[in-house]
Length: 113
Length: 120
Image 1 (cartoon, chains in turn orange, yellow):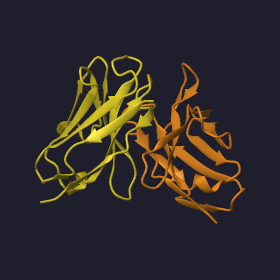
Image 2: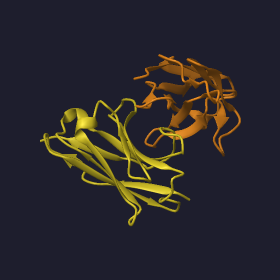
Image 3: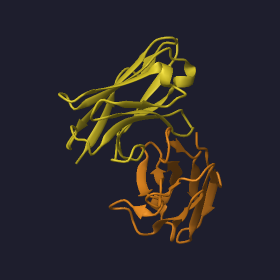
């Protein structure tokens, strides 16, 4: 199985400031034949199911605010929230779907400082 | 608007079989464009993919659970189901059903989840 490791485990950021969450996979999730990274980011607010924010490492889902962005390739990825809003408080998960079983990171808890 | 709703008993006894159903409404169910999956989350912990089923009826399971899992499809009812046998306390979790995109393992719509507790 591909192991996904996120850092940090928790993060406190002031409103309006930038939040950065990192994700590292134990092997590359870049598929060479189509040059796509099989990496997604989910947001899970308390008491809710996960919500898909970003797929293919950097493609925002429809309706996701543009303050959310994803970057990286191969084994190292980053989710950035450019200007933190109160409604962004959540746990964020990265996930690889390059190989079966799809696996998730342990989650990063984002709070307001 | 696509909606997924899990249903089933909230309590299971050790060694018994857990059975859940996901009802899909408001969108295309019988299409090869999507696949359908089950993901679980133990209280306070992370997410674990259980398995998926495709329009053709073919299935894919997490090797860690494969010997105990069966996922099936009922296109006439727009439903898919999960059976997990020989449950233990370690199977206590929130169970989510989800719609997967054409690419296996990429889930874009999730149900609200149902909590299943394994206890005698």
